[in-house]
Image (cartoon, rainbow, N blue to C red):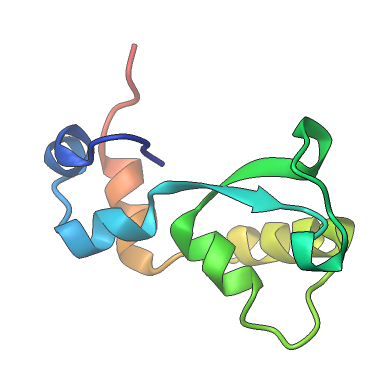
Length: 96
């Protein structure tokens, strides 16, 4: 994920602007504000724009524990992000 300017992230991972936008860091409320969730540290986690939006495509959002298990199952199968995201991130050495 990236926050701020995308230029360096795009160059490092050789992404299009559209691909990079999906990986932009956002704040995800574990308990939605619409359902009484607060803007506090315990209720907010970092999530890429893709994950944040995908979580809310369901009619009834999963609770945080169920969502975490769902994401882990998808990641174990290599199916959470599009294949390009896994391939791109795996092909670049981590920052030292």
